Image 1: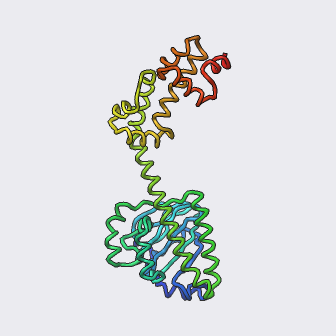
Image 2 (image 1 turned 90 degrees about the vertical axis):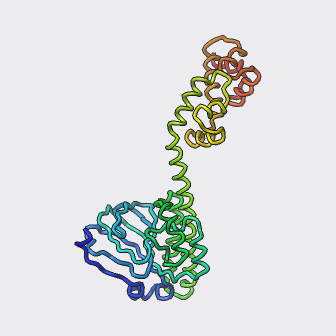
Image 3 (image 1 turned 120 degrees about the vertical axis):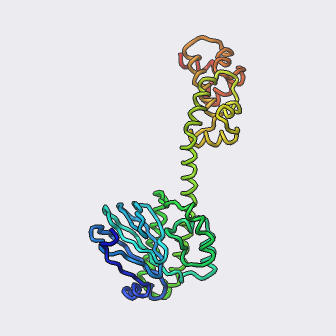
Amino acid sequence: MLTSLRFLSHSFAEMRSRVPTTTASLVPLLIYRDIVDATAQTVLNHHHDFCSLYLVRRGSGIHVIDGVEFAVARGDVYVMGVGMPHYFHSGDHLETDTIHFSPTIFDRETLEILIGTPGFHSLYIGDDVLEKDPESARVSAERSEARRWLHLTPAAYAQIEGEMTELRTEYLRGNSESALLIRSLFVRLLVHLSRFYTEYAAREKRHAEVNGHERTVAAAVRFMEEKFASPLRIEQVAAHVYLSPDRFTEVFAAAMGRTPRDYLRHLRLERAKTLLTGSQVPISEVARLSGFGEAPYFTRALRAATGLTPRAYRNQKS
């Protein structure tokens, strides 16, 4: 498919000359609102000396970058490095906020801080972060292993969309005051995107861990449901699924939304409630048969859950 496209290389200076009334004449940054007509993509664009940040505003499509297809949709954010050819080959009402920027927009100190910000380099597609320098080379291997697609949550998208609007407003003013402000606004945007990426990666890791422990949690639940009436301890359940108590509690809580201790108490309370309302078994026996052991402990647990003593609960339900 690449051979059927006309190759066109763009320099930042050439693109800047097309928008003389914006702050692009004062700051090496261009902002576009792109509506992608994928059927009309006949050019393989090459960004000679600048990077591009994309925020997908709506729709979906396929963005081919350096020969690799990326499915994109509303809420996706990614940065394309210097010198990468790209084009869109399909789209459904695809619209993006696009920021083209030269690495020269950052002074050395700002660049070093950005590269050291967790999540920043992971926003990039490609092997270079802003420019070819020793620091970029150092993080390249880490980036290739750690990078994941950033997809903003609705709340995060609303915040970033607001920052993009503010940035675009100053960009269109085209005066020196806006040029001074726009650098700070752009750095703020990148820092916030970096933080959102770090949070996103952490959520994805937790999700993967939960999925990876589905069988473990299912086995623990079955074991607890079979043994809850006995003097079962969480340490025994953890040993049954070959995890330490702390690790088991972490995995179980992530999957079930409650700790194993809470779930065990829930099972015992449900059995106790059934015995209280469906039989005349003495309170002490209800405590033993439901796994609480002693009646005073059972009474405290039921009162904490329902606000009623066992006798009051039985009379209310009878």
